[in-house]
Image (cartoon, rainbow, N blue to C red; front, side):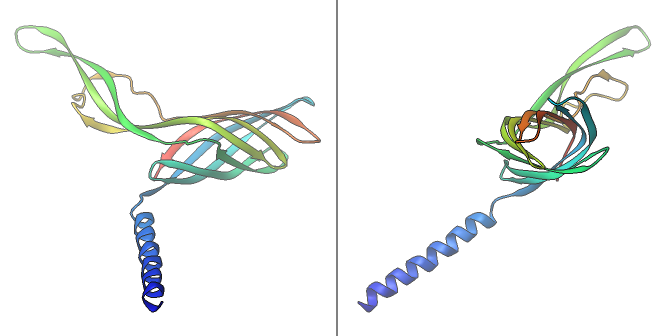
Length: 188
């Protein structure tokens, strides 16, 4: 009897210790979205404001975003919760570049492809804007630094900008409408 109790106790302690190690080994980052917001009410009128939201990325998986929208007449709290797996994918974005070069005998165009770090994700979300509830779609795209075959100085190229957008509908017993958020993205 004592041996079985001892075995159960050791098993429980070992499983708790290992689960703590697994959680401690996961990388946690913070995703912050800062930008503008527009709420279009079905009762008439639009409200524009600024938004700041942030939330955790645990091993690339987005948790709830929480923040505030500063509308002209009032501030509203906002919560954005993924309804399915919202995983940020890290990959490399190819960017074409070109450069006009001249040497003593002739001039020519040189072309190449550079690769930039990119983190992106998209998915359905539940929204809570003050007392309004609803659903929508969140898209996040962050472009980082050049990681290989970087363009030489003086090259011409176009690098897409980082950003986030959220489009959704919200409703309550007193109002309903659409919510649009757009802004810059920072991952720390």
